[in-house]
Image 1 (tube, rainbow, N blue to C red):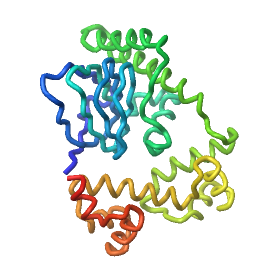
Image 2 (spheres, rainbow, N blue to C red; image 1 turned 120 degrees about the vertical axis):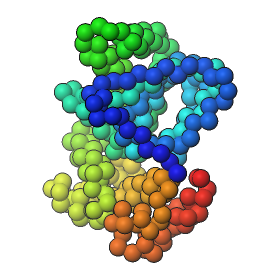
Image 3 (cartoon, helix red, strand yellow; image 1 turned 60 degrees about the vertical axis):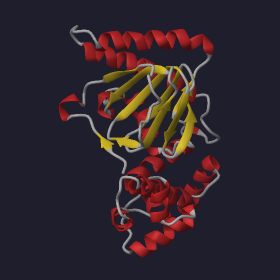
Image 4 (cartoon, one colour; image 1 turned 135 degrees about the vertical axis):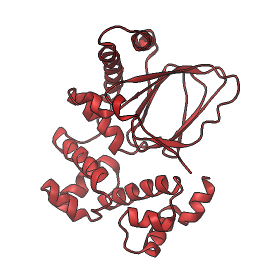
Length: 279
């Protein structure tokens, strides 16, 4: 069963920083998910970080962003170290550019919107300086310390966003904005809307236009992305210990048998077999 962690209600506007110290034994962190963001900075790398069932190498001076709802597991090497920032997206409700960037981490698959950031060597000292400044502020008793920590975290986000701007895909800006709007809508409504026409209607374009935009961006059609979103959430729910029947109803499948056939057709495993593999 995968536990789900949350930030207490009174702390949701604060940024919490935990130090990742060198280990005295191998890290046995188990798969889990959060209702908040985790922003990892690995100063000394080593090990692996699995996010939504995809394994990433932990490299030195790298940032990994884990979005709410994603299942992840950190397996650090003994001498690895760094910091992790915990925060709610509402911390950035007045910084719309960063809020939009974080929404993309929530809405886009990790194979499409890579959660790992590796910087040129000439930026390492700058990034370490910002992280250490945030850590000092977090541990101080100074006035407005959370605002200062939030400012440092914002600067780190901007470094990450700058890397993303180098790869904007093959769509023109107008079609790219339609694609992002579709992905955000899909993330919000995939349990209720399972037909291409539903999304096209809300976005005020034709099904063909939507399919063309999605295919240009991903090489896949809209139906495939809808199915992938359903399967990803099904995998997450199955690993929380939820029974296949419960998952089928959570995803608004009227018939559990239909859900099981759909899941096996997409993954090659029955829901129970998948859960047994990932126990």
